[in-house]
Amino acid sequence: MERFPSDFLWGAATAAYQIEGAAREDGRGESIWDRFSHTPGKVYHGDHGDIACDHYHRYQEDIQLLKQLGLKHYRLSISWPRLFPEGNGRLNAKGVAFYERLLDDLICSGITPMVTVYHWDLPQALEDRGGWTHRDTAQRFADYAAFLFQRFGAMVPKWVTLNEPWCSAALGYGFGVQAPGKTDWRLALQAGHHLLLGHGLAVQAFRDLAPLGQIGITLNLSPVYPATQQSEDQEAARRQDGFLNRWFLDPLFGKGYPQDLLSEFAPWTNDLSFLEERDLAVVSTPVDFLGINYYTRSIVRAGKPDQLMRAVAVPGPGPVTAMGWEIYPEGLYDLLSRLQADYRALPLYITENGAAFADTPDADGRIEDTDRMGYLRVHLQNALRFIEQGGPLRGYYIWSFLDNFEWAMGYSKRFGIVYVDYLSQQRRPKASAFWYSRVANSGDVTEP
Image 1 (tube, helix red, strand yellow):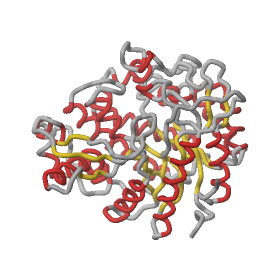
Image 2: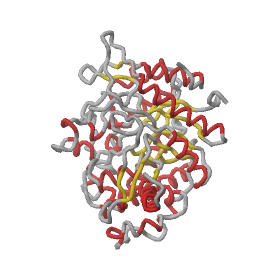
Image 3: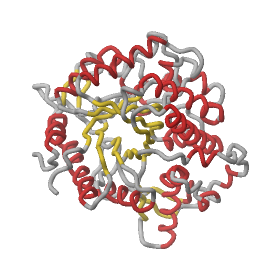
Image 4: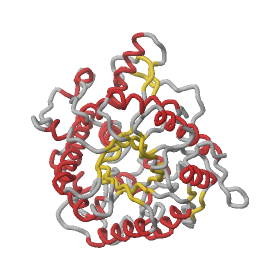
């Protein structure tokens, strides 16, 4: 097989807070990222998403760009506080109208939406009541998701409940480098569980409402390799794999939380009162597909007893992106193969894959991002290798369609295949956009 299957889905992805802007317009409420990014010292250069890519006002232009590039699939997220400013209760009709226009215009342009229900923008009003550490937030999330399924179910064939719950829990409540910026691992474990519980409740609501379509979840996953073949490094890799991957994969697939990790979390798991008897059955409610966000691998060696997972990250030998992440395309193949071998066979979608580089327009305004094209080519070749061996990979959504607000990195990192001048809001497709367009329309990853 030299080409991807003819029914393979090719798309691009974005997230609401990263592109929409209009943070205080038309009744939108405050999110945890509004609060976090406006807290001094939390985001690079004091950047925030108040304007971002101004997609809220320029969505028609962006849809036309997708159409011109021949991309027929688009993954977006819906801003929870734009619809429910307090997280629940009062509905903001202007927010609903915006997403109705956006989805309708996508469909009329021949572009099929995949919608992420939650991409990190928890209403601040819910965080003020405990956020994801509070069990009630899981139910509030399910209520919000049920509203979306009822209102937009006929327009959306594929739904993603959560984007990267590991990041929401570990980075938001453990390491504190993302919103809401807490640094308490006991809270991080509670948040992770309630995120998964909210996911399960949302899937159950989806089944009850039975809209046309499918539902899944997206996890950020990294294959973990030991720095050496010494037993202590192999054990460190096992623990790190549990921390990064199995802690979310196992309960989703009915295996419960990894027992071998409970001792590693012992300082924070003495009180598991947040875990109720029926929770894991809810969490493992069957989904229709699994979304995978892959960027790089993890290499570790054995660490000291006081280090998380008793593991220390080791840099890989390969070239890196502007994020400092090693380019390791073989890791995508290894990850996909492991998922197929260790977990229930499901259709898989790569819901994010891409790279940040220091893109600069030349004198003629062109952005010749050859590094990005090289990155994409070798990762897609590894995806095709998995398909050739019978792997159930059904689609690929490039991250990202637009340069955007890159969370704690602010506007310092550019992942987009479309360059955004943040002062003028001018969009310029990069060379990678035209390359990806040709690949998406031919299925041929040998495109020059």
